[in-house]
Structures are given as structure tokens and as C-alpha cells.
Length: 586
Image 1: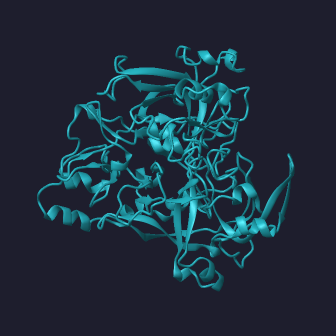
Image 2: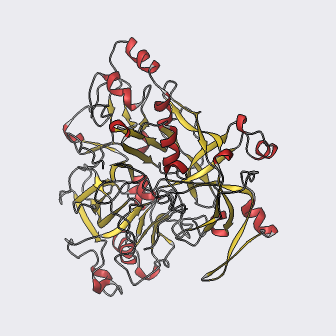
Image 3: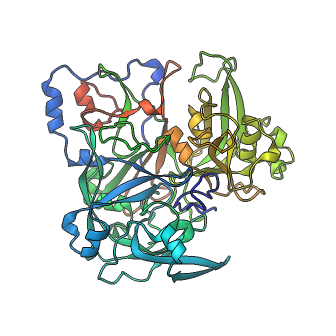
């Protein structure tokens, strides 16, 4: 939840369940620096594309869901999944009046599991003191104008199932949720990608349970969204901790029961559930509304392979290169369960260019100056007494800090010593001018200041393996927004406690997703993956194409594949490229 709508003042910036405190995919066969072009153009037989287009099915058309963006005053942006109530279900006059032909935008959140929408005339929750919550009560007239006027669902005629359950988010935002019986289900259209016509559509329909917020705090209600849809690890169903898949309290469960996407399916004769999800967020540079045919957009992709790339007029195609699979960690408080998608962050390194013609696959010290920041604070740095030495400390071989990947967090929230080192060592700014905790920092340069810089993120996964991933620095270290004084706002902030706790959960938020597409994967038996038995993983692909060390495309040039989905692209091109789609025999 946001304290205000600007990342400059947000807390953890989103409806995220980060509590401050399987499947292992094959590695790419070769690197892009060793193969040109990566995928040939379509075969010349003109009957092949038409035959493949005719074989596109409902699952293909449901698997890629284009995202929308909702903006607030100032610099707030939310990535949302749009729902439209179908007329056949809008029999009640209040449904037709409030919802029909109107869009409900749900913030999608990889650090939360819940699915819910606002109920009409939802009331206010408020804090009496640090430990006491008051309400629900009607909103004041002023707050009602500010918070309560949004697209909502009327309360069903039937009684809810049990009592309301309160969700409390990491920034103090709260909602009271009620579940209604299956007889109250509604059918919504969700955004999908029409591969035949290469355009966004609303042709996919899903049946949703009614889970409604009957009350919300001001922090929750200030966000310009109409609800929430969570994508934490499957099987994590908080706050419905005793629910199972048949209750459909999460979007994953809704998709699995509907059997409508490639990426949430039963395999091995129905005994095993497989999940594959790619989340792509594009750097938000303005409020221009995308056309239906625009193939450069943010999306959710539930499926195998890669749904976007750099294509040329002759049909040649480059794909973003995903890292090896990294096993996530069980929950810190309950190691018998998986909840959030988490790794340990060991360090972040800024590569500053020293020459004009750069090799973006090399760290050669004749081309790059490396400025590494260790994520785990040595004890003598906890009080910032050796701040000037932060960039001089050698790499550590020990563990890192726990980080969760949170698409709904407007800022990456990191330990104060890390943010201080970015402020002083990377931005070259005085420590005394650094803003207070829980406020985003800025740099005194233009949005393009770090255009030619790279970043290295060093992680440790749940199996103890170390990985380094690389991306362009600009998306992580800049933003489209000015700080109001000639500089550029970032989406990075320090956590609350200057006495750094190395076992606190930290956040890599929206700006990390601008830099990388993230693939979330798992297989499991039963209602959820189990630590020690199943291995949920994450993989990362920088939102750019690098070939032979040369950056040949940025995020804006990576477009949704044309004409047919990934499942059929190999047939279209007469190839078998696992990165494009592994096929049913993979």
C-alpha cells in the first residue's frame, strides 16, 4: 500500500504481503554472442502460416494477458489486470449501473496471493493508536470524495461465508474481506492477445468468486485501483489459510480450475501441477493510451517459451536470454511453506563505461569501472561509521540479504547502507543531503544519465548456488519523473531501521521489473509446493538484446511475437528452438 501516490513518499508502494520479517528449467543452449541470427524467418510455404493460424486455440488466446496502467497525481503508476463484467451476468440493476461496460482495474502483485474487489459503499478502517484499529465506520464527506468513489460491486443478496478476514499490508494499509458462496460467482472478460489479428482483445471469459473488501484504511483506499490480484507462490492463500484450490481464492486457482491457459496445467497424467508465468513491466514514460495493435506492452504470460523478442522485416527474430533457474527460499517464519518469490542478494555492481565501444558481455577493466556494493552489512558498518569505505570492501563469500520480487512495490526497499552507498558512491552526492528513510532518493542528472551503464546483481538461491545477472542500469537507477529541482527521481529507498537487520525481508520492486522480465516456475503435487520436495524457481531476462557484446535493442523494441503464439512459432519457422518454445516433448 502507498502512504501517498508518489514513489518519492511511498512506503513499500503496493498491496504487497511482504512481511518485514519442482521445475528446474534448462539453461540456454548457447549465448546470444555465439549465434546470429537466433531464429530464422517463417518458412516460405504460404499455406503453413494460414494452417498454423487456424490451429490457434482458446488456450493460446488466453495465455498472454496484456496489462494496463493506472496513473495517479504526481508520479504514481500501477500495473493492472482489467476485468469487464459480461452482460449475461449483470441481471441485477445495481450491477448494470455500476459495472456493466466499465473496467475494473486490479493491481497485480507478485508479493501477495489475494484476489479481491471493492464492495459498493465500503467503509473506513482507522487506527486509534499503534495497536488498535477502529471501524468500520462511514467515510467523512471529504474522504468519501477522495477514496470511496470508484468502480465497485454491489453486495450479493446471500450472506458471506463466515466472518470478515482482515488483511494488513507491510505499510499499514488494511482491508476487511468477505467471501461469498459459489452461487454468487460472476463471469468477467479479461484481456487476452488475439494472435490471429495481432491485437489486444477481451475474448477470454472466466468465472470469478466474489471476494469483496467491505472496509479499507485510507492507505489502501488512496490507490487508483479497484482491487487486487496476487501472484505469490501457488498454494499460498493468505488470508484464507484453511482454503484449498477448490475454493478459488487466488488467481492461480481460478486459472487452474478453468483449465484455460498453457502455464497453469496438470501434467504427468494429472498428478502434477505445473506453473509457468512471465511478468513483463515496461518503463512507464507517459500516459499515452496504447492502440489495440501495439505489440510493445507490459503483460502476464502463462505458458512455456518466450512470447516477445526483436523481429526484423524479413522475419528474423532475437529473443531475450533468460538466466538459469534459481531455487527460491521457504518462508522465513514458516520454513515448511513457500510463500513469496525470494532469493538472497549478495551485491549490486555498477559498471561505468570507460570507452565508447562497449562490450556488454564483458567486465573488462579497460572498458568498465566496477563499483560494487555488498548487500550484507559488516557489523562495523551498521552505524554508518565507515560509509566512505562501502565501495572499497572486497566481495563477501557469505550469505546475502533476503529479497522478495514485488511487482506492486513502487520502490525497491533496501538497507540504509546500500542506499547510502548508491547516493554517495554512484550518484556522487553528499551524505548529509540524503532523504530520510522510506522516501525515494534521486540523482542530480537527466533520465538518461545511466543509459550506457550496466548493473550486475549477485544472488544466492535456495540451493546455495551463486548467480550473476546483468542489465542496463537506466531502468533501475532512473525513472520518467523529475524530482522538481532539475534532477531525476529514482524508485529506490532505504528501509525504516538505521540499525540494519540482516535477516529482514527487503524488496526489489517495480524498477527491478523495468530492468528484467521475470519467469516464475514450479511443479507440485497436491495443493501447494512443499520445501524439500518441490523447487519453485525464478529466472531473469534483461529487457534488451545483446549480440556479440553489442546492445542492439532495448525494452521498447521487444515486441509480442507476430501471427502465432510461442507454441506454434517453431512450426512456423521450421526449427526446434527450446527458448522459443520447448514443445510438448521437452
